[in-house]
Every structure is written in structure tokens, then in C-alpha cells.
Image 1 (cartoon, one colour):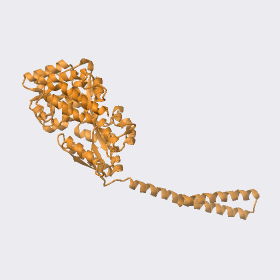
Image 2 (cartoon, rainbow, N blue to C red):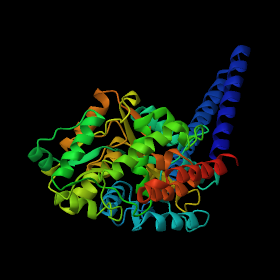
Image 3 (tube, rainbow, N blue to C red):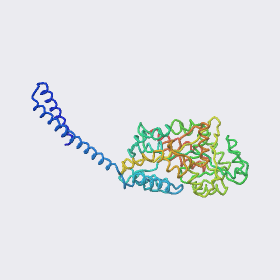
Image 4 (cartoon, helix red, strand yellow):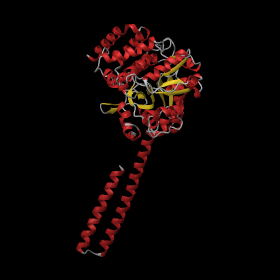
Length: 463
């Protein structure tokens, strides 16, 4: 209505000015000129008044839009599988306290004690209105299967907004067919943790070759210390030494195996398994019945086991959480058993995904935008003393041992490879981890197990 009034005023003004010009040209009487001037002034006044009304209406519209974009009082849910060991619940609560302070939007973390229960619960909820607004998940193939089912909301615009703050490799890990999903709240590398006090007492130094590594294992054994923790408990940890053995044989072979371009019965794969088998037979590993998150840390602290190969998240949330003094903990990256394989390290990306069926999608994306920023991405990382994914976030909270890991990777040009859990299709991985467990407990069954792994992979890739 106000716009119409303004337009009417402008038209009137133009007509009056036109009349003025006409009359001026005709040399009309002075009275007529005065009348024209009064008409012009009136038209100008009406136009200015209409313009003010239009501006007021525009300001009211902006205020209404801003009110609609305020999600103060909203509480969004965050399901996660780190409610036992490790326990990330306090870290996620800290994230929620900050978003509550910043936007009035809270985060309710919902913890699950085991990965298996968490996965089944999330899968059941995602197609429904009970879907969590946010949930921790895994990258690459594990994320793609949810995307293919239409269960994830896009975060493409947010990745575009923050693209200069993240490495291209990380962006690629969250991008599928040109669209991005979720965001990365931290990232972790997988070194070998060792008991520094034991190493110092026995005169052991960090190995640079495979022979030096096996010599360390032999020395630990001679001194009554089991060299390495290994377990089949919780299923998934069985891939830890599998992936290290294949990468240490040939990193390209590892990638091809994950992508279905190589066979598990490939002679080189078998050669890598044979190295693993020789380590088992040499007594380098613990009883596979131990728990990675409690027993291994306690055995490490009590000098019953010398080394644990696990992600850098293990330092704070397992070692320190289980009372291992920080001065006891140091690390190195496992040398390749095949020198031609070069320097390699496993990377674990840590995504939080947004549900397509989130009942608070706009508020959730506002929170995600903040958590992807340099300040927001630092919240979890500083709590767990992990590597933030945003390259502009602070890192002064990192312990010295983690700084050393990152410097080693960067300064020596390590090849970074995606973790097996995410790097190969989920249906293959879910069955393969049980075959790796069979191998750990029955290494003499290697040929049969490799054939069965081939069958599992073939069944997937032939679909």
C-alpha cells in the first residue's frame, strides 16, 4: 500500500512539473505560476511522506525476519557413541554450553556406551521424526551409504563459507557428487604409543626401521613385558593391525584393496598377513581377550605391555582418563615392514552429521556454522587436546607428544591414508573385522580366511 502511495506521489510530481514547463513556455500569467508552485510543493510533501512510510514498512519487515531467524530456547540433540570409554560426553556438553551462550541454542548430547548399539539406534531413528538433529558418524563410505538413502542434510553452503579454513583433502572427504555433508569436529592420526619409562630403563630408542621395531619387541619380551596390545573385543579393533600390515606392504595396494581393485588373496596381501602371523607366533601381542579401553591402558601403566597402536584420541580419553601419568607416554609412527612402502600414517576424520529429518534444521545449521568456525571448532579439540580440523583454530592446548606426531608427519612428508573403517564399503568392513578376529585367534587358517574375505568383497562389488 505504501509503495503504491509513493508511486502515486511521484507521478503527481512529474505531472505538475510538466504542467509548469508547459505553462512557462506559454508565458502564462503570474497567478498561474504561483498556483503551479503550490501544487509542486504539495506533491513533494506527499512524496516525502510516502517515502517515509515505505522505509518504516521495510524496517518492520526486517525486524520480523530477524525475529523469525532467532531460535533462542531451542535445544538440539546430538547422539554419539562415546559415552563409555572413551567418554566424550563432557566435551559435547561444553560445546552446548557455548552455543547456548552465543545463540540461546542448547545441545543435548545423548551418549551410547557401545558402537554397535549406537549404530543400530541411529539407523532406526534417521528415517523418522525421532531422528537426532546431529550425530557423530564416520567419513567416506560410512557417510555415503546414509547420503544414498537421503538421510543426511546438506552442509554445502557452510563448507563453501569456510573453505579457506580447511584443507582441500578434508573438504573432499566430506564431499559427494559436488555436495557436502556434516562437518569435522576433530581429526586424529594413528601412531604407536609406548611406555617411555620402560623404553628409557631398557635403553630402547624409537625405531626408524622394521628391524629396529622387532628388536624392541624382542627386548621387551626378554624382560617379561608383552610388546603390543591387541584385541578382538568390540570387533572393530581387529582392523588396526590389518591396515598397518597392508599399508606397510604397499600403500597403493591398500587403497586398491579398499576400492575393490585388488583381491584379498593377492600374493602381496598374503605376504603382509604372513608378517602379522609371524608377530603373533613370536608372542608380540597380548591375549586378544583384553579390552582396548580399560585393560590395555592399565597394563600399559603397570608395565605389563609396552606399546599400543591407536588413534591420537587415545592419549587423553583413554591413557590420561585411566590414570596413566603423561610423562610415561610417548609415541612414534610404525615403520613399514617393506622399506619400499615408504613413510605412511593412518588418518581418522571425525564427522558430526546433520539429519535430513531434523525437526530443528535451521537452528541446527546455525550451530554447525559456528562449530565449523575457528573459534567453534576449537571447543572440542581443546577439551580432548586433539587436532582441530579448522586450520585457523588455536592449537596451544596440544600436549608435546601430539605436536611431535604432527611435526613428524609434516616435516618428513608422510603419506596420509584413510582408516580402513571408513575407506572400504561398510558391508565389507562389517564382515571383514570378524574374519580378522578369526585370523588373530587362528593364524594357521590364513588361506581359508583370505578366500572368505575375497567372497565377502566380491559379493559387494558384483552388485
